[in-house]
Amino acid sequence: MSDRPPQTDVAIIGAGPAGLFAVFECGMLGMRCRVIDPLDMVGGQLSALYPEKPIYDIPGMPSVLAGDLVAALETQAAPFAPAYHLGQRVESLDEQADGRFLLTTSTGTRIDARAVILAAGAGAFGPNRPPLDGIESYEGRGVFYMVGKRGALRGKRIVIAGGGDSAVDWAISLADLAERIYVVHRRPKFRAAPESAARLKSLADDPACPVELVIPYQLDALEGDGVRLEAVIVKTLDGEARRLEADVLLPFFGLATDLGPIAGWGLELDMTHVTVDPTTMATSRPGVFAIGDIATYPNKLKLILCGFSEAALAAHAIRPLVHPGEELHFEYSTTSGVPGV
Image 1 (cartoon, helix red, strand yellow):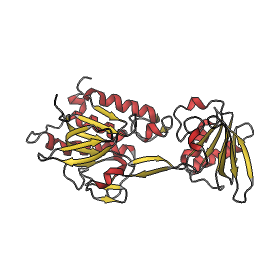
Image 2 (cartoon, helix red, strand yellow):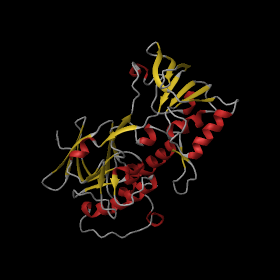
Image 3 (cartoon, one colour):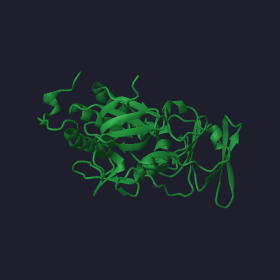
């Protein structure tokens, strides 16, 4: 039996929206893809952090839930039969004698690719955990850093901690489901979009609404049996304590991110982003391209729709590497169609 790694035309590191659309764009140009992502699901932050939040700036879709957008992108890529390697991180990227790349993942998977697209979003990410004793035992039971199924919180007593968009948006979204929502923030002013902050205050001012602003307080302790959460203790800076009976704590204090192994791959970096040529999305390392939030160039906009455009640019720049000497007869998809569709 051969121990040679499977070959592919393009290895895509990251299965978020930009990475998924890159599969489609590469497929339309006759290139096969393998996709690697440390999460055990596709969709990146859309799936991991806010699958049931609406997105309003996808062209032609006035409103779409993040999870539904991911499902549509996966369906769109499906005709090109991408191979997904989920739940593993690319640890090394080595150039071979023939100019191809050998990728090795954290599970020992090896992939031989002609070109690489970095679509790793913010890089390796995880929640900023509040420093509460014993919080680990409640994680996945009463403490959640993302809302997977909005309906699962129906009738719950919920403490939401944080002052940013995630905290405010979820407080608004869950107001018609929860028995009680306590929004804990250390100061009266929220960092969320002004319209959202005003909407939250309006809900809190309505006696018939279950939303209460607990300000200025900070998380102090959890009460429960180590499995089932019973209450969240909060305190002011002066030490005044309050006990909030709760079934669920949602701490939204942002993400801790870093490039992980990517930082050691010899790419030109700008802080925690990879510098690219915006006309091709090529990095400083030949054969390696970057798209989406991880890529940076002058006047870069971190929008999903920009990631889609960048995926198309990268795919067209890669095609001559995979099919050298073959002239491209550019066609719109309305003319060429999609294989298998």
